[in-house]
Image (cartoon, rainbow, N blue to C red; front, top):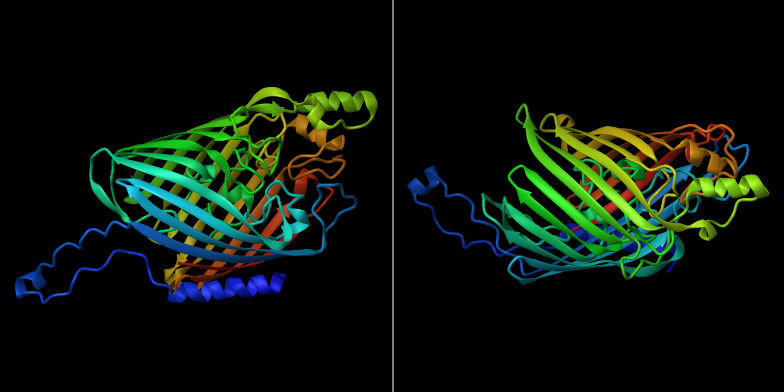
Amino acid sequence: MPRLALAAAILAATCLAVSAPAFAGEPAAAGALSPADAATPPPPPPPAEERFALHAQATFIAQTVPGFAAPYSGPNSLNPSDTQETADVTAYVGARLWRGAELWANGEIDQGFGLSNTLGVAGFPSGEAYKVGKANPYVKLPRLFLRQTVNLGGDSAAVEAAANQLAGQQSANRLVITLGKFSVGDVFDANSYAHDPRADFMNWAIIDTGTFDYAANSWGYTYGGAAELYHGAWTLRVGLFDLSKTPNDTSLESNFSQRQVVGEVEHRHTLAGRAGTLRVAVWGNHGRFLKLADAIAVYTGTGSMPDPASLRRPRTRLGGQIDAEQQVTADLGLFLRAGLTDGSQEAYDFTDVDRTLAVGGQLKGTGWGHADDRIAIAGVVNAISRVRQIYLADGGLGILVGDGKLPHPGNEWIVESYYDWQALKGVNITVDYQFIANPGYNRDRGPAHVFGLRLHGAF
């Protein structure tokens, strides 16, 4: 299917989103209210428990980067004067198997490329651009998982129908277990203001903590399991996941011989009557990794960079991060992410960042009469260790970066802003701008200006 045909299919899907029925429970039968009832209306009934649900989304993103200073380029460089697009259509099918158990399958059609084939910037500008790009549409199954919720008491709250979530009720204290194929980011490092490239920010190092080298194949999904224990204002999460067979690979390990363990503690609070959340996470990856100093030593002795596969040995790489969000007013929310990881080893499944700090905010359009619109801005600074700078200077390649040389290293500085307009219920149009200084940690190249347009529809 040509690109234009797929784009037309996406636009048709967004139109469908406007008229598609909701998959909620049947409403209660209407009846006349007595005067007493009218004076004190009864509380709304709890939502009906969904047994089956079907949702869908379609997203089209076009990005362009005009010319910028690029005195030299390497295999993993961001190219000046490039325009690319990505498109995807996803179906979310869910069923309740027994009390508290949900089975979900997501089928997806993808097509397109990120700028420079998703290379050249550690904080890459599109979370919808995978490490595998294809000119023709192709089908994949990103998620197939079982979620079991065990209610443990406390206040009961309604659960709204959504993609990968059946409507019903759950208690404040509960245990949630998720098993199967899904994204580590479905459970960990979530943030209300920056976590979904189909709805909010697009930059990789803003929607996720840049140092979080989470287990994933080239599309961002893996096999594994997670357990979440909710008690009052606290949540404890732990997870075990398969790494890919080799860095940035399309294939995953099948026996957890290369694996990731993640732990996260979350606390929900109020400040001046406004809700906020703080998450602190640690993770460890165990597998066959390259120690960067070993590759540098070979280069120093031979004058050529070795094949990383020849120097990979069983090792463990550790990291940690904080993720905070705070509502300031009914319309304004702020967030912060910061992370640190071991910079002596190669990055494996996400991107090339050893230290990161991101801050930003989102404002709803109530003040200018468009309550469903949002305007947002965020900034992130990414840094790498000195040994990684030397490795790149010697011609080494990371997951996303590597200009062939790096005589003048510097931190990546990125600012992203967007305006999201809800054209119709379920249909959003977003204009996005990103300023990227020192792409690939290289002060000789850039700055780059990335302009984007996003069309998104969902029901």
